[in-house]
Length: 195
Image (cartoon, rainbow, N blue to C red; front, side, top):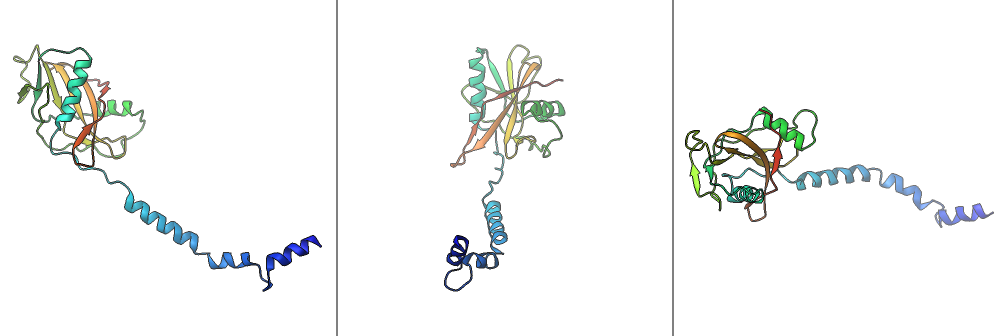
C-alpha cells in the first residue's frame, strides 16, 4: 500500500514520472558540456612566455646577492654577452635538481648571444674570460634564456661563477615575466655539474 502511494506521487497527475523525461531530454547534455569545458580550457591555458631579449639586471642582481650572502666580497667581472654554457652535463644536473628521471620533455633551444644588463656588482663588464688577466678574479657568465626541459612553461638561465676560468660553480635561475612586462628571477639553484 505504501509503495503504491509513493508510485502515484512520483507519477503525478499525468501518469508519467518527471524523472523518466530527464534521460531522453538531456542525453546530449553531458557530451556538449564536456566539449564546451574543453574549449574554454584550451582557450584559457597559459601560453609559455617568450624569453627576454637580454639577461635582465634583476637576474644579475640575484647572483650579486647570492655572492654577498656567501661572504664573497672580491672583485667580480661579468661577461657582457651570453655564453654557450648549455651542455649535456648541465642539462643532466638540471634533471637532478628537478628530481626527474627519463628523457627531457622538450628540446633545449637557447637563443643566440644576448646582452647582459649591468647590476650593482657589475662594475667591471668584460667581453670574454682572459685566463692571464682574470686568473685571480671571480668571473660570472650567463647562458641565453631557454625552456627548462623538465618543468612545463618555465624558462631560465644558467649562471657560471668561477675563479678566472677555474673551479666553476653552476646555477639554474628561473625567470618569469610579471604583468608589467618586466622580468623577475627566482632563487638560484646550485647544480652539480660533472665536467
